[in-house]
Amino acid sequence: MERSVCWNITCKCNENCKFCFRFTDNNVLSFKENKIILDNLIKLNAKKITWTGGECLLYPHLFDLMKLSHEAGIENILISNAVLLDKDKILEIEDFVDYITFSIDSTNSKVNEKMGRGANHYKHIKELMDFIRAKTNIKLRVNSLVSKMNLEDFEKLARVIDKYDVERWKLFKFTPLRGKAIETDQLFDITDQEYLEATSIAQKHAPNTRVVICINTNLEDDYLLINPSGDFIVTKDQKDEKICNYKNIDLGKLEGILRQ
Image 1 (cartoon, rainbow, N blue to C red):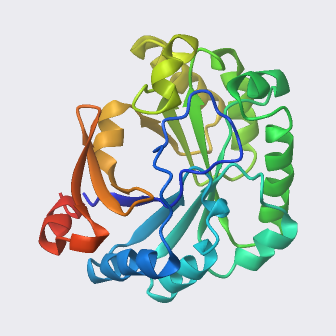
Image 2 (cartoon, rainbow, N blue to C red; image 1 turned 120 degrees about the vertical axis):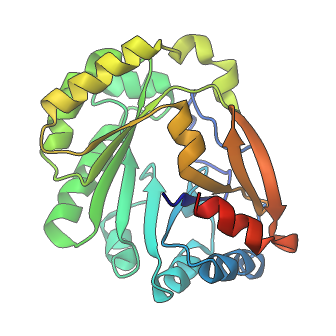
Image 3 (cartoon, one colour; image 1 turned 60 degrees about the vertical axis):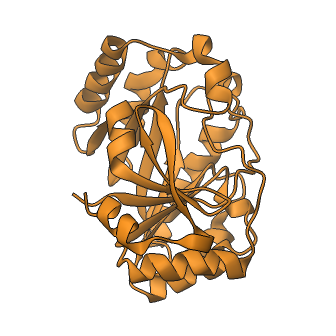
């Protein structure tokens, strides 16, 4: 199995999710520095890159890098909270974005507000999903956090997801891995049994959607991470392990990790 490259290109974000475990490194690399990373991913024959953050759309050179990635034959997956996305922006990126992954945790505006996403989060994304389906060839994916805060809304959310021809719906169990998630675990933490019950509800009420169960071991096994400072990282036993930095890239070691 090949690991996916998950590039956290910035830690900046325009939402305030209380469960967030993004990197908190405030360093932002230049286009030239990030191009060094991309050039090496191309040498490694990476098949796809998931662009995320923080909110990756806050990085000023994101689209330039994604265009180069697309030209090299790499699939581009954009993960976004959609705050900076509108219909014109979607048409602008259609030619070099293969998938857009939206973060949707609830259809309930009050729940979204309590979680830190904002009351209009779901409404805005739903409008964008309608447009993407009707006007573009971009495939849709959804990520959802399964937590104490939104357990009761999963049946309704599943029914909505199933109507949108979503290519993949990934369900993350709340994990106090880093950042704010460590401080707020009492608000969000659930048992493995509660998580599995929620995933069963999702599978039952979204029969046309590929539901992916994603717990701690999946997070650790699935990804080669790149943080905003250009560190290449894998996660083991819920701890981040630095492999190398863009200034001293070890292609042999990275090749072995990608192809594990």
